[in-house]
Image (cartoon, rainbow, N blue to C red):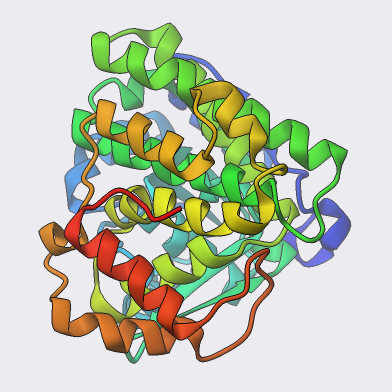
Length: 356
């Protein structure tokens, strides 16, 4: 199947493989795609893995572009597109977190080239047909089957060295996909089961990983959670949490995973006002009787960041953020009003517990 032949029904049709060291099978995966000229995408911080992958590919590696950035700026994508054309690549290999995956998707959207994603965080975006891009200070998203990667290789060895802080925030970022899936208007029994699977994997796995960051079994468990959370993100619609994070990330350039970690308890507590029964699985996993407060306590126990001000957001930015987040209607279980969102953002900015 070529990328141009993919349809909406193929939105979860990626070849998914798990295993320590599986990244070293990359040459056979390229051959399986019928490709022979791979462009490797990464960030400067993962150049070591990029070199390893290039060595494993041999002459099939025709270039490395290492300028992927958070929130997938269109300007960076266009620069990468020029480089891709110079290399005459016939497939893309992305090694990294959501930033690198986003760049790969943006290129695939414009070229229809097949993608192999090798995640090094728990972002989960590799498992979705969704692309978020930033231009002119505004982040927009689209869903298209041709941005869904053809192959995903989850290698636990690559997340062993993930710093503890990023392990926590990246994991909470993934959990946010599953939490919002529980109250999505188009949820179903299958998506609910997948969401709970992903949440349970992180509730169990994150404390284990923090106790021993080199625990490959625990790391693989969290990668399986990332796959489940990412897959459900691609199946159902998201609500307030993702809207707020896209606003804060795209318009104020806040770090993606940290922003998700901070906003998650507040958005879930907000929506628990109308969707407490749907969010009950979170309480069953974490205890308590409010899903937002349960997530806040869990995040705090992991040492997660809790205040937007610590990310550099100014209190004077909160009014503008509120305006951006409430300017267009979107599906959400609890009514979205400017005064309520302003109060939510104030609590998240200060690092307070969410209002219930």
